[in-house]
Length: 452
Image (tube, rainbow, N blue to C red):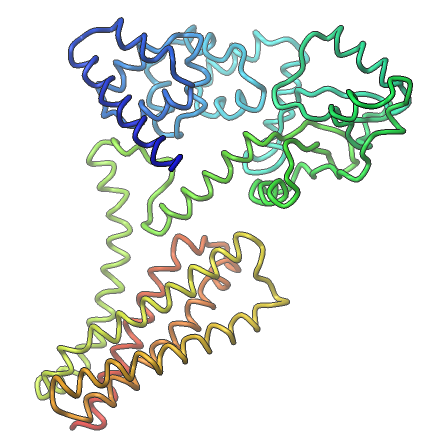
């Protein structure tokens, strides 16, 4: 219900903005934008074609442009940045969190980056360089160096007075980071503990030492899984010597989860989650042409297998009529196993310890479904063509193809991951090829043996 409501409100805002842009009422557009969160403005910009998008971007308040840019996908963001002047880009980056600024920096022109770094004070420049020193898909690339640290030997009263003197704390701060005089991470002091404990107690007495720091080199997907498993709101990031580097907050983790979901969905069609849905026709066609070419090659392979049994098909027309059923059943069964494997690998639920058991289970599921549905299809085929041999052949072919589909759906993701290829990107194409080839070979081969 929430998702449906959000989609409806986005569509309504898009319709209202489109009408206002078409009518030329810039004041109405600015009014509509002023009440939106940066993420909502970004959604609207991504939903508009070129032309209206650039016009809408000009009406976004300069002080909001940085936050909106962060929420845009990479291709749309890069396109808007190309149209901005240097002073506009500098102004847009003011006030951004260090981790957000690091994400934006990769899209900025070299002259802007140089001027931006030159305008920053030494502390903020060092913080930015610390984030940039790690790949963006790691904990170090996600972290924000802006945090509040305290020592274990001070009293809670001292900490409270320090926070009052500081005046504000970073967003989504649920705990203070406890370090020693060498900045080695020791644990966290939850704000709830700070506010409800005896002010005369020391930090060491009430701090939580059980919350380990996250290694800066940990992949972002593993960070997201850690937050999910432990219900974290924030977590410390440490280096190899356990020195505190920064912290990761739940808003960054939500972005990782969404990006991974988009990546898995788009990769299955050979697309990129950062693609602009209103990208130029030539560019979009060029990107998709590669995937279509790969699919065409695999289709020719399946057609070649069919061609090997041309004489059989000429004599037994029923085989040509029923042939797609065998390939389709194998494709569906294989995709079910493939999806389970890709999800299991992504969540870390499949490994050397349980892979064999999972393979046996998937094979047994395919055998059971194969026996059930091969019987159904066989009976239909016999009733249709009045030939018992046709029913037996297609029933056996379905069982063979479903077993092969299960093995392929299990093995393909493991093999692709081992050679460093994303299973979500290439798995479905390989699986389709295997199930088509095996299905046609089994069905037409059995037909050749028993009908000719």
